[in-house]
Image (cartoon, rainbow, N blue to C red; front, side, top):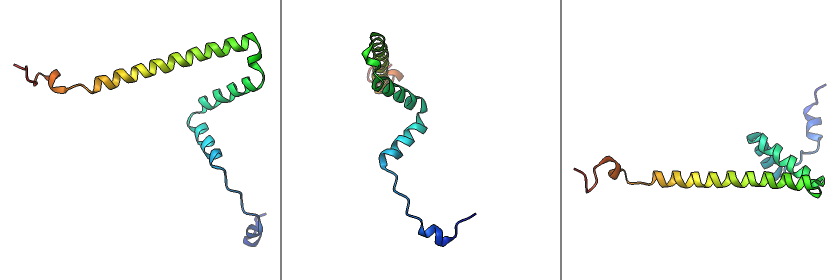
Length: 99
């Protein structure tokens, strides 16, 4: 049964979707694994996982891994930026001291 135009017009207008919901939906589609990890972490914390020694140990272990990864990424970015900003004339032998 299809609705007529009059019935469709009589229906209440759909509510606008909040901006935060659209953003969350976009992030979930772009990075589903990161979204799943964030949801699991939130559930762990809200579920009382930090109360036990095992829970605190898991959080510390995961935190160390995240910090290590962030530091490696930062250092790699610095090395890449430093390497790309050098003077090509020096490496090609066309600088002032070239023969």
